[in-house]
Each structure stands twice: as structure tokens, then as C-alpha cells.
Length: 114
Length: 113
Image (cartoon, rainbow over all chains, first blue to last red; front, side, top):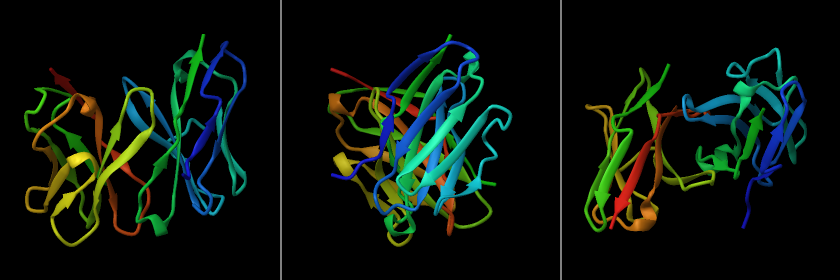
């Protein structure tokens, strides 16, 4: 049963610390998405990649957030320095044209910045 | 740009009653439409999608949705709900040829015994 995996599932950190979240997309999927979910803003697209190249990161605060795909099996989202307003659940999703536009979501990383 | 409006933030219903969750979209070009479900502390899971063809789409867990182009709507229905359907439901849209989804704000479905 192919699934998107995300680590860590939970992260509590202090303001100013660096946070790295990791995502392993489903093997064969060539598109990876990063979302942030909060009660106030709902589900927001932060960035997405196709064939490891960034296509759109307009939803991401550029001064502190960065997203990369070092290889086809790993996507990372970093926050440096973290702030309390970054507290949210961060989801990774993967897909491909072959899946008829369906996005498969991971279980999320719940980030709390104190 | 596309947008999605889910008209109800919360919908309480009794078990075994029918339910309809409303979704309207805005787009100047042809779209693909989706409904996702999020159970507590989990990621989103696809319920159903409309890409083309029949405007009545059937999904998992007994849900169905009807695409109405003239009313720019894609409402989700189930004839008889169960306690296990308690979750948040998201409507989403993308334009044909793209993969980037735009999500609505979600509708929280609560089933009362």
C-alpha cells in the first residue's frame, strides 16, 4: 500500500530555532506539494515541485522558509528562524498526471513553536 | 484565478439522515473538481473527482457529487450518513492541464446519534 510519509509527526520547538520537515513521496509520483493548515487560514499551498524542480513557491514566506527536493525520494521544508505564528500542521502531498490530478496526502507534521 | 466557496462551515445531521455539502467555484476556464475528506488527526483523502463525462460522480463510502456547470456548483451528497462520516470535507478545483489545487475553507460534518 503506497503512502506518502512525513517526519517528524510532531515537533515542539522554541522561537528562533531551525525546523526541518521531511517528506517521502509515493514512488513514481513526479509532483510534490507542501501545504500548511491552520484554523484561521485553512489549507494553504506553500510550494510545489515537478520532476524535482520548483514550479511555484509564491505561497511561502521567502525570508524564513525554504523547500527543496534533493532527490526524487525526498522533499524538505525548512523554517529558519521559526516563529510562534508558524505553528500549524504541514502536509506533503504527491501526485502525477498519471494519477489524473489526484493528490495523495501524508499524515502531516504538527509544529508548535513556543 | 480560480476560487472555491464552501457555503457551510459546519453541518450537523442525525445518523441515517441524508446530507448535502455545498460547493461553488469560480473560474474563467474549464476545471476539474474534487472532494477530499479529512478525519481527525489525519491527512486528506480523495472522496471523488470530476474530470469529464457524466456530471454525476460516485465516490467512496457512498458519497456522490453532481457537477452543474451553469450554476458553477459541485455539491456533495450522501443519502444516509453514519457516525464514521464525522470529518471535515474540502472541495477543491484545478484548471485543466494544471495540478495545483485551490481548496475551499472546509465543512465540518458532525453526525449525531
